Length: 292
Image (cartoon, rainbow, N blue to C red; front, top):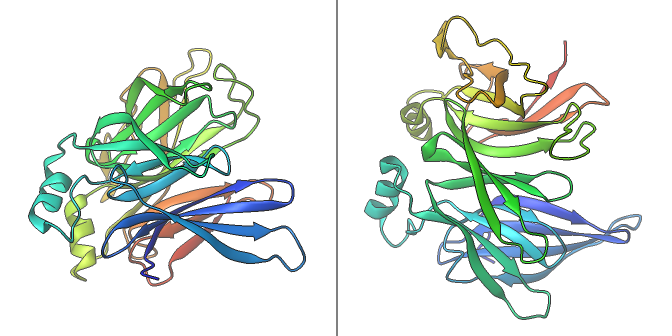
């Protein structure tokens, strides 16, 4: 199998889980499905492969069942077909990408665009009840907020939240979420690249790109967190900025690249007080931080 995994996501059920993996194959993009039994030891096997013209460059996946999922496409042009057009999409911030809804419930693959005109669609996540989706647009520097119709699975754009960096992966950190009006202590955890040129140089081994993990949550009871007085950049590191009055955005972890470079995202284990993150080009592949 021509297997080059990019994004992955689980859908859990009582007796087994389904693992969806975005495969950036040389000849075509696909979604690979794996079955994992909840036995001891667990049994793992490949089930099927999904490909479709509306999934030209699968990046991230949000499954809402074992047979239904949302897939972001980070480019409309494949690198293997045209490196020039692929590069143009990346650096021009043109709204040429989209998010696809895929349904294989009846053993027939049905796919349709549910969010269009995105600028390098990347990470995707949702609230626990799937009522609200969050989709990162890397070239636009933030994430879109969408309401989801539970009957049709269509998405309706609500707002865009800028984060002062090129977003990558996004994770919903559930800490007492009840509804869209009551998040508890829940937040979005987002990996961002503060300088896309430095990231390109990291690929070539010229320098190490900075790592930046941010969090974002709606403003509660009109209480707005204070923005760093030094502005967007200080001491060679980048500062989170609150561009919208309705959202609080702040830095959780940041490094200039010497400790860990090119981080793409993270998840928090509050029971153990640790954050676990991943990176693109760091030799270690992942990092672990403990809460002070």
